[in-house]
Image (cartoon, rainbow, N blue to C red; front, side):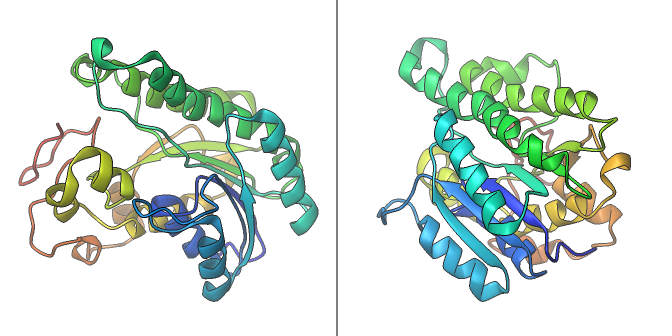
Length: 282
């Protein structure tokens, strides 16, 4: 189970879950293209594509920092081509970039609706379309999208319809890509966390420090992603994985190692039913 020599194209990977996935792959000796917008330091957002690249190199991988807004299909195509030229191809696409605004229909400006759908659903499509010509030539190609399991329970749509539908659009592409490219051997799966994950979005947009303390570290998603990406693509596709279920099946028993605050009651993530002893999702 190693990603040594594999090339990953990660959207929005300058921090958080995307960076954690990149660093886990880098420890195997993978090549990682970080395609994100943050080129200059921001006091509210830790890290840039260049600090991410430095961390990847320090972890043992090779990095290619790329300034990319995934709403710009021309720039995405250029960045994908630069990645393939630098590393000889692309083996894995991680659709990590996402935009969030937790407001209802009457409180969501149309420009924020457009942002969420432009980054989440359209961005997933644009990145996949650009990477697929290279994935189709790869030995064990994977598309992994950070999006929730598809459900029809109206309660997940009630509070923030624009955000929910934008995330579910990403999940629909998992079903679509898995079916469309199954015979060509390209795996397409989704991964979602059981709990809130300690990221800038949680700190700045969602729940602040209280939710951060009730979260798990991004490394749980990285370890789960690593297991998925190490599986035979032809036999592992069209699935909606939950991080701790993946790791439990892989033999992990110590989940406390992922807690931000040891012993704290964990917050269930959006679109996930809380297990006994967890704080319910908002």
